[in-house]
Length: 571
Image 1 (cartoon, rainbow, N blue to C red):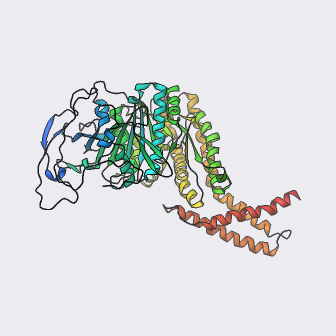
Image 2: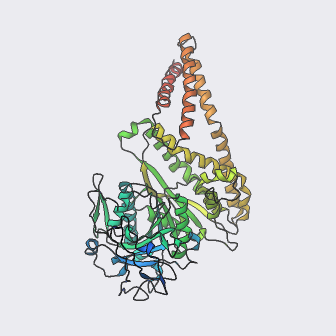
Image 3: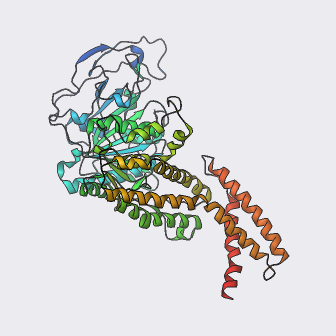
């Protein structure tokens, strides 16, 4: 069992050394469900004892027993009561508040409905209509980072409910997707357990000989999170409106692309939401960010996606830090100039992945069975299952959601557009070192380059859409502008070197340092080459925690070399 950090309200869980068979009894009396017992028991199978009676560290010599479980359409689905210490703070007797619904998923995401799986929202007497599906993707983030993200997500849900009414919480679902059962942080699991969402003791690896692919937990909670001095505290009934939560924990350690498959190919097809909001676990949402994204989609029926503003969270004194200030200036330039300019054309290819929303209707399959998500998922298919992979297709994996944006505006017989919302704001941690800057900017720069190449080579697909001739001309001019920008960016490295070369030559002129300046310029030129190679090699490393002192020293030398030229201008 995972250890819990001080500050958590420790909740009792089942002992992993206990060898008693697990008994399951579906609770009765939920006034919202179509039947008194949930799920509806259709079939009865005998489960192998090794699947459900195995406990880590079980006493040797103990004879296993067999327990019969009722399965829902051949699937293992049970409602387990939440821990007593958490149950005492729940006033409602509805099953969604008092029990956690566990589903052992034994199929692929696209087979979720065909295999008879469903979600709790469809089991009520009046099935709930989901308007907003918030997908929170996590990998191995610690509890502090995860709790900070979830706290901001919950605050956004509360604001939405205040705007829409008391019963509007039934139209919002928060879906947490983890990339691996054995990769998730133990403290994060303990946090989810304390909230009543996760129960590790009921998770199974096999059901009737079939391997479990993912574990799905469903629970409705009013439990709140508070972070005080790097400690997470659980507050019972902190929020006025309940929050519906789905927690999908994959059995194997896979990439985030797999989690996105579960979100869009599996759960979204059951919920059929109006808007999907993908959020990374390190995103710090503004208090009304999701509401502003919803308003942007609602204001324009043909808006397929909308993106917000992501700005660094830096203090006043951090502005004087060179690397952080440069990164902040670049993001402000993008938020104030680039994104509004591209939004005016109806296509925002540089959309920040940390704050965007999709209209689910635009992501559905057309009459030919194709979806804008196909190119994105196919490009990110693992190498062992990717058939006919080429070098170009492998590089397209870096383009990320940008492929989806381009596929939306070029979708045949459609006229979707992409917009930018200046009111939807999220913050991210500032950058304070060159190593971190190289690591954080490497993938976005590569993605922008590949996205531009992909847009230019597939430009003809725009004419398959139903956009007006003026909109197609606008897209054409936008792609022409991107092509020119790509040309300048391609030669930017050489232009900077030429500028540096001119500076070093001017220092060696007789009017300045003479022969000493020439030798100094030659040494600095070699240092420039060494630092350039160092920066290039460092970007190939996944870890940015390296001491890149040479580029830093060279930067200040460039500033110093500007002084003689400035002096010459004013004299």
